[in-house]
View 1 (cartoon, rainbow, N blue to C red):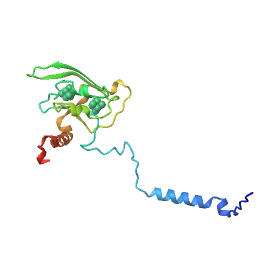
View 2 (cartoon, protein in one colour):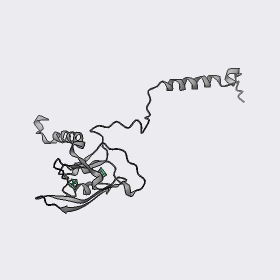
View 3 (cartoon, rainbow, N blue to C red):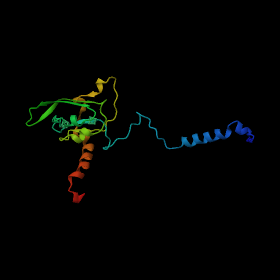
View 4 (cartoon, rainbow, N blue to C red):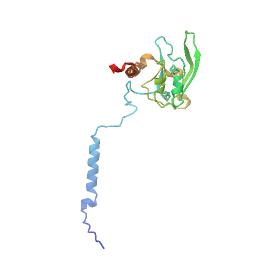
Length: 173
Ligand code: SF4
Ligand code: SF4
C-alpha cells in the first residue's frame, strides 16, 4: 500500500488567494491590451476597393444602365440569386433588362457576376449592411441596384488593374 503524504495547505491557499491574485493580474493585463472588438454600428467596418460587398448595377454617364441583359451573370451565379427579364430599347443594337432582381438573402458575395459580365455592368460595391423587416424587401430590384458609375469607380479601377495582368504580353509581366 502506498501512502501519499500531502502537505498541509497554508491559510492563503485554503482561501484561494494565489489563484485570485493570478486571475486579477490576468484581467488587469487584458484591460490594457489593444481592443479587438468594434462598437458596431457606431464604428462601421472600414471598406476599400478590395471590399466585396453587395453587387450593384452601373448607370453610365448618359443615364442609361450599362447592362444589356445578356444573362451571363444569371448563369454564373452559384446561388441562383439573380433573375433577369430582358427587353428591347429604342437605342440601336442595345437591350436592357426590364427586370433585374438580386435576392440578397441568397447572394454569397462571391463576385462571379462581376467576373462574368462582358459589359462591365455589374460590380461589387462596398455596401455591406443588410437589414429589413421581410424577406421580400431583401429581393433588390433594378431601382435598388442602380448606382452611378462614379460611386463604383474605385472598384472598377481595381478590377481593371487586376485584369490588366492578363492583358499584358507575358514578356512585360
Ligand atoms: S455575388 Fe455571387 S452570389 Fe451574389 S449575385 Fe453575384 S454571382 Fe450571385
Ligand atoms: S452579365 Fe452584365 S450585361 Fe449581362 S445581364 Fe449580367 S449585368 Fe447585364
